[in-house]
Image (tube, rainbow, N blue to C red; front, side, top):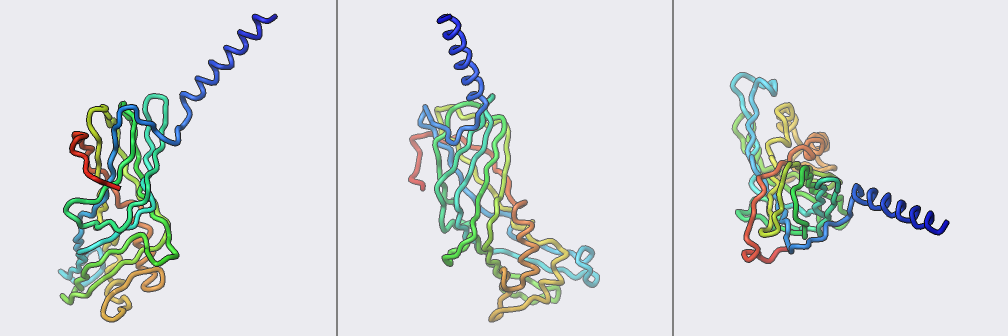
Length: 245
């Protein structure tokens, strides 16, 4: 009878180990001292809207050129699969990120070695009540008549911008880094041109926020979650690490 208890006990241990192999881990402990660095920057900052798409007069065009942008990121969240294991990594916040900086600010987290078949990184923006909002973009709107009007987009809502990749190898010998690009040309479609031309101005500037030109704000709000994509993952020598957040 005692032998049966031993067999049953071993069986329960085996079942428990099988279950834990497929369980999602909240963190990925690094046995190699390897880091994955995350950064974010803007691209495709200029958009031209054609007359055929906007319903304007023949050969009339309008454009938006974003010239500066600041992001306050609540955190980056990485979800990845390695064999039968799913891992989840959450970074600290990354504040006052200059989206147009030649060398973007980075934040990093430890990551275990291996080949990750699927990776999804999320930029998490969180609505603020303190005055420091998640995203501000500034630039110029050129109307169909050629007038240039300053434009500002003040985003203060919750949003998650996602980017995905496959088959990323962390070799343990080098750190891994990637930059998530925000494609600003995806934020406003041609159908919004007429609305922009009729937008309310605040001291000569088209301010787009939840309380100013709210219709345009909601157009961008719906598009913002679709504007992210990866640049390629790069491997960097660990000795070249720079101070990051």
